Image 1 (cartoon, rainbow, N blue to C red):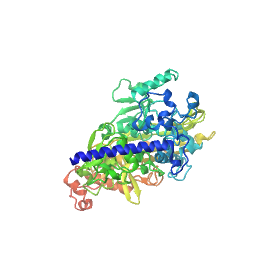
Image 2 (image 1 turned 45 degrees about the vertical axis):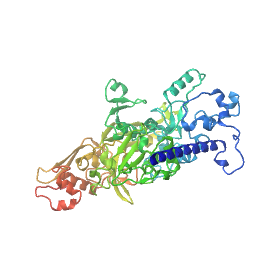
Image 3 (image 1 turned 120 degrees about the horizontal axis):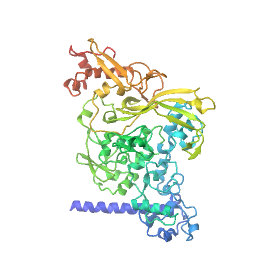
Image 4 (image 1 turned 60 degrees about the vertical axis):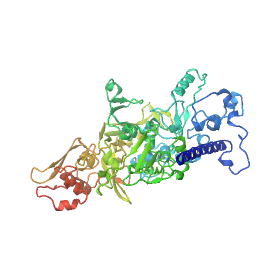
Length: 632
């Protein structure tokens, strides 16, 4: 009886919450936030949703989400126009055909969602501040990569033209100007970049509408809702570090479409880039979406302007895959945004503790605890996933406590090398990605090779200490700045060997073995090649033979980050961050000292397990047969 009564109470509570939200939406529509506490009515106070003239022509239209149904909020809440007029032309005056772009969001989506709009306006997805800052820094136009910018404010300096030609396509401020569903080629669109969904019927009817010269009015409207899928992320996040393609298990190649026709394990994207099949992220293979982990609190931001994306991402693997006990909050402590997400997705776990992110306390509303077991409700299909705590191998020692989960659990990541950027002032096919206009002259990027490997080890240093994280070549390139200036091509060419912090999104349940860090040249920053521990003379000597030739600009292998236990590239700018660096020579020696032990002792041998607790003790009591390296 108690259980049934509690269930009824929950149903009543959810019903009341729905009524309150709908009431709030209607209130906002007719009176607006500016009129709260004021006796002056808005100009729409005398119009109810069902009496808008829009419905005289657009009757019997379906497809709306529950909370954007015209029966509750009308048509003008989103599309504006003049619903008092019955004349078609007059009623369409001031109408917004594609609401949700940031250029109109303050009058459309932002009327009901002002908090979300204020946050998204300063998010990195809108400002692109980090991309602009790093580019200007590399071009020598800024003293630090940590300054704050907004992509819409850039002009036409060498770096800004570089951004306009190669990078400025992916920002939420770019307007969606054509009807239609989100695709791989979609960029921008403000709110609807994430929240627009077309059913098959809506897409087919839109096609009929366009083919009939706008005469066959669609009866199925696309939905503006909370059901974000991976395609919404793909358009922008399949570029640069290629998170979306990595997550799905695809590696970019330099092949053309005709090279892979009828060949298995290749995929041609809508922009004709060719990808080869690799191992997908374990979360993807388990049918999980990007938004299963990255909630609205991260994706839309928190209203704070960050310099770089890793600062804006607060979620950690350990928030779900906890060590001892996860941090949780009760349902009745959820913030308003989380309550709305909970309601829209029709979750029912109101009586269970909900997991929260340790860094900022934002709730993971699709998770809960039942006894000692944590669960995640998949946002793609509603499937219930058991969340596994950290394995004993992750939390058994202090030796790896400052190593990020992704360092060991990423199966591969991208590396691109041999990049050359030159400005072709006569190129007639230039296109300004920011202004969306054809131009003459553009920066052209030439790439030598796309590679994959285990991530390289980088060191993040802060007031909290050191943390080892994945790194990839962000910019190993020559930059012909002279070509941007008239008749100076080749006169001002700079070479940059910069790695960047990376979150590969190729998570795997199994981990890389100890040798793949401690005696792997790519992991240590030397680049691909053979790293051999030579004991043939009775003395230990590490020897490295690079796979790639030395770059004449700095005498390092083409794909390397640093020199093999020497100072090359150690004493100069070598990353795109001021708090991130390669392994020092001392750290390399320490890594290779363990690597020497691993030449004879397996990962899980008694000796190596003991070394996790007190490595120095084992060094002091080595067997006489052990050979320590001379060069570390």
